[in-house]
Length: 322
Image (spheres, rainbow, N blue to C red):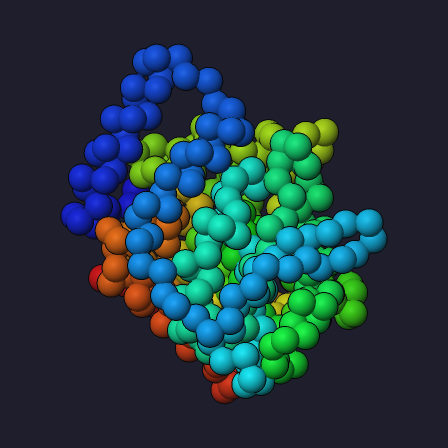
């Protein structure tokens, strides 16, 4: 079923759709540079950047690779949980700079240390370069926390492509116990590279993220890899050792159904999972906070509650935002 858009997003979406139609009419060719510029423009819709006690750039070093990161802490002398954040952008776009306001807000809302990762992007660095960078940070994040107190709990989090990275690392961690992941936060995650769930068609036009754009991202990301199903976290192996999960869904998102299906598979495997659906929101609504302040406020509160939740009796829920 096609999603029903929140009325306060109608003007924004109308403008987006007009721009898409004009680009098609003018024969504009998609390029990584143009895609990156367009995503960066959304930064204008996140105008509130809170102050935070500690925010520093650094590098995690691993096997001839230096992975840039930004570290945030609302209370550097306090022993806080660690959230390692992987930004969205179709594996092609996004940066720690673009996600600076969001990571500050997560650190403040969850009262945690946030390590935001500037992983390598396609097509210059196709699969699995970016995922390997993120794994290196999960293994070596201690390197960049020498000036910040932190606890033993490690949470990975990401939106869209960042959610794909989280869910891929969670699968890797099942077979490699040295990869420590206690929880994961998936924000409208991309977990099915076959694009076979119904919402890809139902919501694949007119809601910012278009089906044709998703396909283009994947074609650039996978390069020579042809078996998209094998690469998809949705079709990976699931067991009870998977991390406790918060899965946030947008009802007008082409990726809606794969996120819901992923959560169902976690639950069937015996994993504690909390599913929250923002019924009238689009993909990437976190990147347009000025237009949806109430929804983003709730989003950060959900993340904060989940990060600090200690009750092991969590059960699956599916609570739509009205």
